[in-house]
Image (cartoon, rainbow, N blue to C red):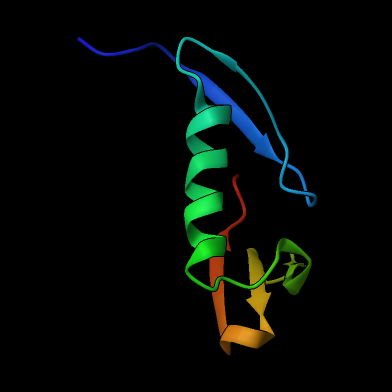
Amino acid sequence: MGAGPSWAYLWPDGTVTGGGERDLGEELAAAYRLLREDGLPGLESFVLEADLEHGVYRVVCEPLGRYWDHPVPA
């Protein structure tokens, strides 16, 4: 019924480190290549801000004019 837990970390240079039953590293690398080919700004354009007082992490990408808020895990 599917693969077990897996993890991957995407580094700013586009490389991936990971482990587990699925090759998430290759899946993320392939997705990253497709997004770059489609004009996604480089990872250096994304900034992570922590607002612990309000319990959120915010990812900001000025070239896209967007941001995404993620709750801080309890």
